Image (cartoon, rainbow, N blue to C red; front, side, top):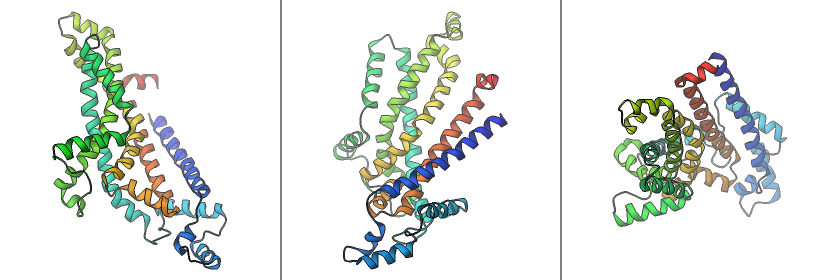
Length: 316
């Protein structure tokens, strides 16, 4: 187990290193000049050159990358090229919206996907099971933006039950209002993610129904439903844990997209604004933090899977 943990941690570090290289050098290929953005359209070439020198943008690119990595090692995400404020402070505030949104979306997705996936498997020979499976395939293909617009029309404009835009100015000091503001965006992501979880859960449950231990339990007088829940559900949940690792990137990306639709002050809106301003220091740090979150959750899922699955430990 210790060897497995060390291997996963080493892969995490390598993944972050590769991601930092890709993010840093890809951003430098994008058109636009942050010095020109700061100087404005009326700035002369000499003024733009002076701004580039002040910001250190005239140095070799490998030196700029080294300075950024050196700051990251010290847990310093740098300062904005536009406002000169610490990136970590603003990013920490924005993550207070994005992370709860992603977590709530995952919770809703599990509540939707796991029970309906089990029901779909138990009724796979009936019309209701076929309809559930077909609906899941259709919903999984729906763009997140379209799902958000549909939910806005139903729950906000028609039922007038939930707010459609904004977040309390006091943030989580008003937990009731803050949670209410995240429900509709979280449902938007959860509809699509929940459909994917439903399909994986259904496949795992169908596989469990074909196992000898479930059939034996059913032959001894248990109903098929009870036999699956009692003996097959642990294996189904293992598959769900694996799905979470696969879908976590979709959750983070979905949260970034949905923030723009619902006008939430999260990392997504900040990222879009900073890309437009060519604020490379903020963009590269934001992207790396999001990548790190995805990699860390994926690593945690792998470790959890190894801990709760005795078959994995036996193979090791």
